[in-house]
Length: 430
Image (cartoon, rainbow, N blue to C red; front, side):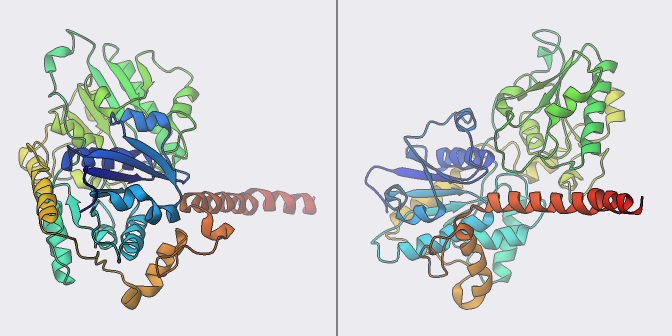
């Protein structure tokens, strides 16, 4: 299978997916060289975001979607880890499978989830069907995946229980606060939760209040990206701008950038609305609080933590409360395991020893799901038969750019309807 010298291709379309896929490749194929392939899109990571992960690729290239099936590194790889959106994963499984039909061997395809799964599980799971390994981040997720696949007549052998690949780092040292540094509270932001400007400004004000109530504490606002950098999910109201808008921000509240693991090294209390950083924090035995101030809602994803013991409010934190995770919840969700990628490495070894791999078998095929499949692959520049579409501005435009254009058009429409039209009517009536 693949080349004589073992190689893993990591295909990524954003900062967080690059981090996930690169770390997965290192965990499941530790002796493989890594070829990084970044999809040309509006969310492609910057060089700083690439370097921040700490994995230096042996080769790097930026590709259009339609370049991937003909990239020699992809075809010659032993393993291809797809760190992309679900729709792109299915597109690659479908088109690569078609491109490799006449090849004597093909790479193993690996898919999974960048963070905790709190919505659209069935949708995402079926988009990943056809990959040789579908990584589940916990026993809880693995059981759910197998249940869905079994009900639909899909082979469950591809489902492998692992864990989030960035769980690690030194355990929390409670004695460091007051000895080596001030007691440090870190708020881990999310680009879209909460989503409104009012809610995000309120959150910054809560942090400022906490910093004033506890002047002996350092309060860090952990930001995901430097100004101008793209992220996996668009951030409409950046926290750094909201923080600058405060007229009296306390001196012990400040923003920080960089790798989350490095920030957690100096954190004594991690606070978030619903970030995967909470799972990282719990894994390292750092006291962790998941806020309920903005509601416990499926839309926010913090319902994932309902049974964890971590849900709390700013009022409780201001009063000195520190939540404690329930051990049974942590164990069920894959936190604290040693060598969680052993099963994945063993499956890869079995695939390698079993001879040439059979063609990928996605759930969505042209025969039974042609309309849906044609829409997904067409957005990425492919025809249903896996060949590139004739070049056109619409077909060539990356999906992220389409979303940005649609969002901008929507804003212009709302501005015209809500602001401009009433003003024109008043002017005409006056």
